Amino acid sequence: MLVRIAALFLWILIPLAFWWAYATYGTPHIVTSYRFHDNGDIYNPRAHRRYIDCDYLGVHGWKTASAKDARCPWVRFFKAEDS
Image (cartoon, rainbow, N blue to C red):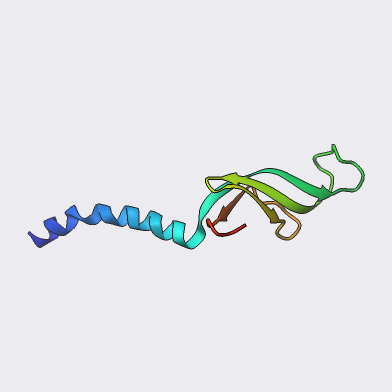
């Protein structure tokens, strides 16, 4: 009987997991534009580029962040107080 009652409250774990992910990582933002140094062939998608900074859009609005290891990840997580 006790196990049946406990099973009724297992749904609480799902919102708690979402809250924990939000508190730990923030919300996802997708890259929309970026600035980079190139080798003089700006329109070649296979040219080697060193990214400088990236612009992201998400629920907290626009965020500009420095590139990580001269790369711009497609999705990056930001907390509300991060810039």
